[in-house]
Length: 83
Image (tube, rainbow, N blue to C red):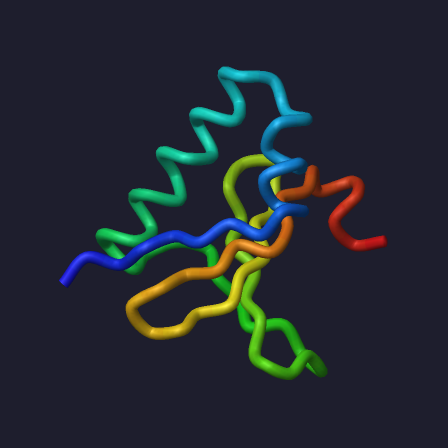
């Protein structure tokens, strides 16, 4: 069963602020994660509902996993992601 990606308004704005080539690389990396379930993923502590972080190069994608749907919350460069 294929999983869907749902983007919050904030995540859409984050991706639009990134240059096109990097944004496409991020989208390809996210698609690879959805098909293979492999990647540098970590569950973030102290957040309810559970939130996860996926490292894709210099960017961090924060998302909620709803089983058949991934809700992308933020896409930030690593220098901004941990502030």
